[in-house]
Amino acid sequence: MISSRGKYATRALLHLAQREGQAPVSIQEISERQVIPLKFLEQILLTLKQAGFVTSRKGPGGGYQLAKSATKISLGEVVRVFEGPLALVSCASVTRFGECGCPHPEVCGLREVWIEARHALAQVLDLTTFADIVQRQSHLEAGHHAIHDFSI
Amino acid sequence: MISSRGKYATRALLHLAQREGQAPVSIQEISERQVIPLKFLEQILLTLKQAGFVTSRKGPGGGYQLAKSATKISLGEVVRVFEGPLALVSCASVTRFGECGCPHPEVCGLREVWIEARHALAQVLDLTTFADIVQRQSHLEAGHHAIHDFSI
DNA sequence: TATTACTCTACTAATTCGATAGACTAAGTA
DNA sequence: TACTTAGTCTATCGAATTAGTAGAGTAATA
Ligand code: FES
Ligand code: FES
Image: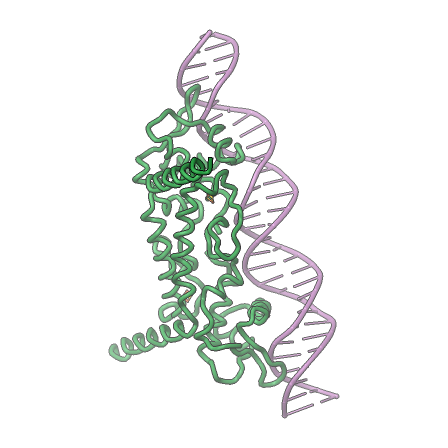
């Protein structure tokens, strides 16, 4: 399970990705529409900014925007910023390899599986961009409307 | 990242799986060989027993053994006992579906990706049994010895 | 200059985590 | 029977993490 920070961050970023190319979006708008505590979201957006995913503008008409194309921001990158390595166990981490406490890591059968698991996860999260997620969501919304329209 | 409990549990279980069919293994032996704090390991083995993975025998010559064949214990099952659902976000959990706080879960593009990620993880962890891990480890050990022999 | 909106730091309450302690029970064995 | 071995159970604890709040400060705009 990822933390609330991570969940909120991905939702906020999706919100911005959906408004790519439009005017900056205020913290308040994201907070209200995505149902995220405002002061908590402030911190999260700051982290997102430091990580280079978003830019901000102060003053009236200000707010947040994506710092780069949604096609260039993968879910994996964002998750790593808030949750650390994708690996379930540190000995399986590619980005930040670490000791796991195993007495003989060089011949550990478990480690092989942890590595497989981390690759499976990375395969999904690193290949999915926020542009993909925006697209999926609009498909879902279209389908949902269709069902709704039909039921009228 | 999974907890120490989870890591220790899988190591302990692998230790028992490697000694399947042999005499019971004492907590102390597992503790020493796997470098796990003894009193902490006691608790973990108790949990493992309650979950039906191992059996125990008291008194001299007693200790722990697998409750069923290592081919019937998947890594996924064990991880779930200690870490809960494999899903990164509760809305993606198959075993214990829950709210994730999203305002519109029914049309959420993120959720689709979280579900994909959970499936990718489950695919690896649920299809890998402790028998597989024992086998992998002996392959690794054989390879390691071969290299060592060669370097003499 | 007043307002809007982001920025930064500190703080806190609650929970979880990793571990330790110790008393207790059951099973062998001399 | 008494002793020893080895698992069982519950309580406790300090440290770390988490989720969230508070508030003063800064930059941009009208
Ligand atoms: S080396 Fe990490 S689990 Fe064994
Ligand atoms: S429904 Fe769970 S992330 Fe949107």
